[in-house]
Image (cartoon, rainbow, N blue to C red; front, side, top):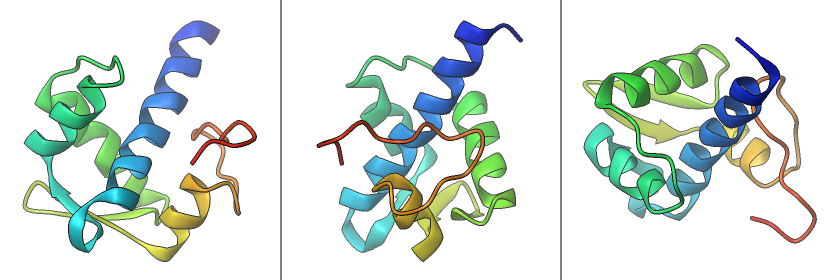
Length: 96
């Protein structure tokens, strides 16, 4: 994977976390995540969303069960920039 693809991947993973920060009960099904990250320019397949969510779950940032992602406290910290995880873009100053 080249650097540009890695940058997109890190930002897309952060976009998923941000969607979950704003979601009711901090949870959303894969189809909803796909739709929401599509609004910010990430037009991806359900398989890609599932793969990203599985990776985020391995890092302890979400719980991923039955195609539903639930944000963890650690995931919230990473989304808002209070913590860092390699593979997830850190927010720019002033970004949620």
